[in-house]
Length: 392
Image: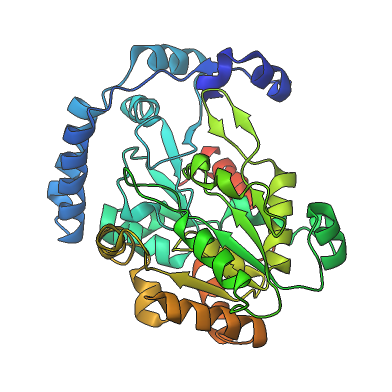
């Protein structure tokens, strides 16, 4: 296991197993602007299906941008791996590991960890990649120039606990756990993260609480605010003691790796989604996760204070990329004003079947597997690729 956390005693002691050896993942000086231009050119070549030029360009990337690293080469000569796996193929952090393996003729596999990543830059270019669904497979072909045989649909492994009955709580037990009233509606506000400097995410919570106070949202609703890992907690501190708000955020932090959810924590988030009456999210992956539980989900794309910044963000980074297909097929209610959002919240509370057919389509298209075995499919893929005679 090549990881930056190999020097963290708590991590090493927790994950040490017979036959497992830790090695250090070295920092990569990514020169962000230069790499971004290179990735844009790669996508341009792939979109235009200039496969011969793309092949030449990928070799230039390996020679000049993601050069093999001697520490990894020495390790691979010693260990002689059958397969090298990048657990996050869309960042540059593991790019030198993969490029070193490729230069030595070792097969490589990259994990594309979410449904939206292929619309971003894939800095780590492995021979094979695993993706969530058939739509992602086609995106890998169209946006990155992969051959179909090298793109494997294994499903969203991080969602596996959602389908595990071990973690399922009744509504009463769940509400008792977090101190909410099971007889009142629960609104789950799932933030999308503060991806732009000075962008305020607290306005939606302010607005929701004011509408509840005025009685404009039906039946004295309560709120769970689930914070994205990139949300700024300081924006929400003023609501910490509100009796009808519960905050939820990732609790597991591993030095050098960041926030990492345990299987139990994912299972508990599943109960939030299962028992929420409405999930309100400005375009996060919770859009799909709520649909897994047939929970009504709405996507407000207005901002009370920063309308210009908000409009630019959705036009360029959301609807212009991964969310564009959802918008075009009208798979969730996308709401452009506060008045529309208020009406949609009340309709979801009163009529949970609203957009049910579209939610089923959303899950079938983007989640694709609902058996809780996506982790096993990914592991089986790695074993197949590493065995003798695996497809190159």
